[in-house]
Length: 233
Image 1 (cartoon, helix red, strand yellow):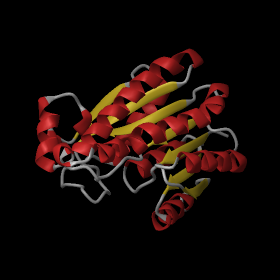
Image 2 (cartoon, one colour):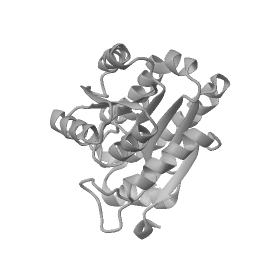
Image 3 (cartoon, rainbow, N blue to C red):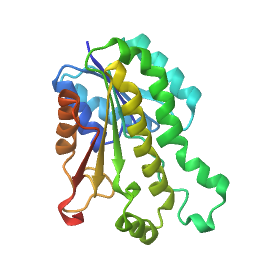
Image 4 (cartoon, rainbow, N blue to C red):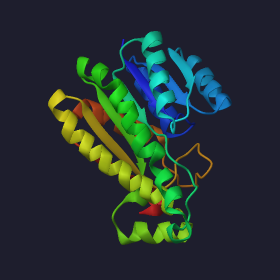
């Protein structure tokens, strides 16, 4: 049976995508730091007859990532798809007022954590036809003046740097893993998502994002897709 690992589980993108892949017969491993959030997700998915388990893990800790993935393999078998929605939230607001040592830490999850995860599941992915690495990202990392302006206005320079570096890592991984027929794809979200704390009245439906991820895995013809909230266009 195919296994989807969701790193950074939450009620928005990751839940919607997990539910979508479950409809295609995937078993699910939900990974996050908050026990209550994980328990709620498991309960909601199991109510629909989904084979799902939860694992607590801090995505800033490479050793814990490796240990968690080893446990999932023992519990569920070979991993076929990874969905990475974990990200560093806050910490660095204005880079000019931040210590360089603190700025370094904005890459703990989106770069170091993601890369650790990829390295740990790589042999599994090589052995499974149709395997994939999927990454959800934010538009603040885009190389545009508009994104830079929003970063300053919202005081989220750290998030912007993490988004940008994560997107570059996605592209590099896509090139390096193509020879193994491992698909790597990123969906960039320009706006808010329904079901999350920052959702606006025009927020993007997680089901739309989930369907995009599902299509990317099946079509395997694009590395990056952007989804825009109507009010953010």
